[in-house]
Amino acid sequence: MDVVPFEVEHLETIMLQPAQQHFFSYFDPAYGEALKLSGPAFTGIHEGRVLGCAGLVKQWENRAIAWSLLSSDIGNEFVRIHKAVYRFLELTDFDRVEAHVDANFDQGHRWIRMLGFEKEGYMKRFNPNGGDAVLYARLKNG
Image 1 (cartoon, one colour):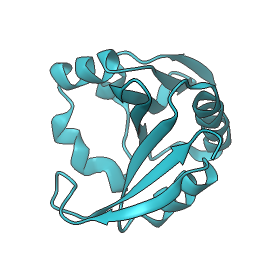
Image 2 (cartoon, helix red, strand yellow):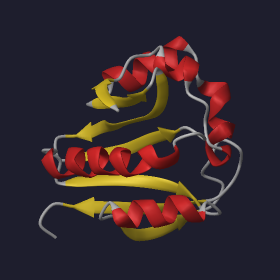
Image 3 (cartoon, rainbow, N blue to C red):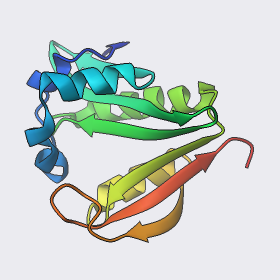
Image 4 (cartoon, rainbow, N blue to C red):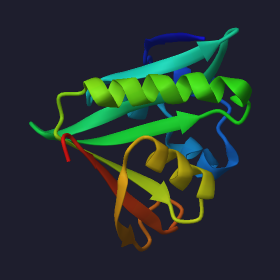
């Protein structure tokens, strides 16, 4: 798998996992460009397929919101994606990184905890589809 800088075109080819498909309607060039410009981001590509995109949206100097989009055919490459995202988070300069996970997405909750995030709260009707989400945060040194 190759890890490359995120490009807007990566959104056009990723085959999103079912739990994230409700985001697909937002994938236009303007949305992709906003993700690209909002903070550091990268893409995992294996055998020409976009397996995942992830990045941080800077809120202010010491706070960012993490985002990730994963392919439904990620398969065994998930371990490599996980390691790349974990390393990325370890190296970030942000003291606080937040993430939002769909309340009903058990695999997402498991992964976010594996990345070192802790649950902070429950957000009703947070997602674009009207679904609830859970707020997680990862703090440097603490």
